[in-house]
Amino acid sequence: MSPADTSALAAVAGLLACPECALALEPQDRVLRCGHGHSFDLAKQGYVSLLTGASTKMTGDTAAMLDARAAFQGGGHFAPIAAAVAEAVGPDAHAPGTVLEVGAGTGYYLAGVLDAAPSTRGIALDVAKPAAKRCARAHPRVASVLADAWRGLPVRDGSLRAVLSVFAPRNPAEVARVLTEHGRFVVAAPTEHHLRELIGPLGMVTVDPDKDRRIDAAMSGHFVAVDRVVVEYPMKLTRADVANVVAMGPSAHHAAEDALVAGLADTTEVTASVTVATYRRA
Image 1: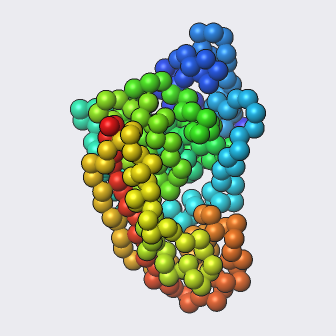
Image 2: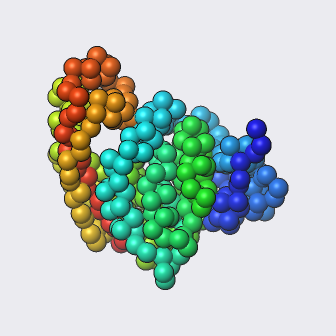
Image 3: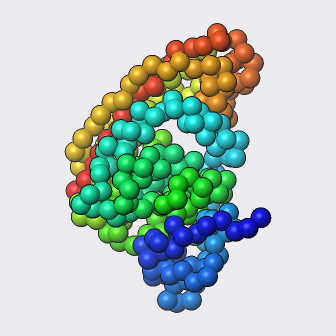
């Protein structure tokens, strides 16, 4: 198999920071190297690993979870959420820049932002190697980086026009550090109504009804909320769709989904309900 195209990584390399010394990285052949000589090989699948030191405690998604998520997203069921995220980031007419997605998974939401902003580049960051491989193929302008956001974002100070966190963990202090002065932090999180028709019958993980308040509290001192939109609509899901919903998220670790899904009707109406909040630096 020939090596994947790494031009997207080369294009944003100067924004990436060496995880050993924080100097800017430069592309040299199939390596990113800093001024102190630390180097990081570009994987043949098209991503770069900036994980260093002891093993991370974050496990990330498995390949099977990502396959299920890609199949569900490919059906267009979360397209309104992706559109709302892209709208929150805004067009790139006056600020092309670079957008990073934390916990990017399949790269679906970042790709949606880039489709709506043709001059913008993207960095997909995830701690799971299967996600890094998949994100490298998500969009021609996506640079895929394997890293642990909780150890610090391997990005230089004040270099990004926006950061996305869609159904993903957040590290507000690090996000504030890497955003430009007028940069945006876009956070999409499920409301208590999200997938409510499936939670009881399938034993899925429930959403804390106080989630929005807890997110705002975590942002305090780093960010101020400037906009909040609830995206809520019904989805017509087949049994296969429902099986993918269960398999792609945290409930994959808790529910015996095959037997339970088999007991559902051929088609089930299920609520999608997500808050898309936009923050600016405090």
